[in-house]
Length: 257
Image (cartoon, rainbow, N blue to C red; front, side, top):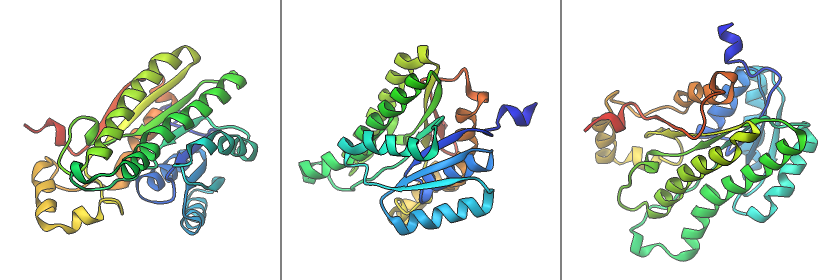
């Protein structure tokens, strides 16, 4: 009974940013719990490598789709193509993200727009496409948005990123409220400081690294795999009565005064 509660057998999940880092770990974790997975990323070589690794490790179907999510006008057509290939999507994980670290006064409009497009607008448009398909099919579903500690607070040199993630939290709540009547659960995961390619420059900064470890009660950076359990909870029937929430997986960061 316990294993069935968290089982994703017979489900198909779509993970954006699924070729590396958090997205790859979540895609692989969902597959390990029974789901077939479709993954989206820009880099075709990384996509293929991720595809074969997930298939080899889990024996589940994996469909790779190379796409730049900044092209938000083409997302609807992309989603329809994914449905043609997979037949159905039951779980959507909006994980793709980008950032630029610079003082707010030095961020130009093009840089701002790209961060917002990839981190927030693409998640909204992808969620719309998912919702429309599920409604036509008469099915519910699960949406999981990958947020950040910056859904809660901010730090210097991250104005576009923090703004996009703050918006993503409110998008999560808004869609959860609107789509609950369609049996679509919408939640978010707020990672703490996780070791990924995106955070590599921060890890390499000795002072910043010490600051992260000292501020984290569990005294370490998180690994992408640390997010898998929460993702499985929110994607499975174990999370059927959870919606409109963000779960911070941060090693205790936000609990520390």
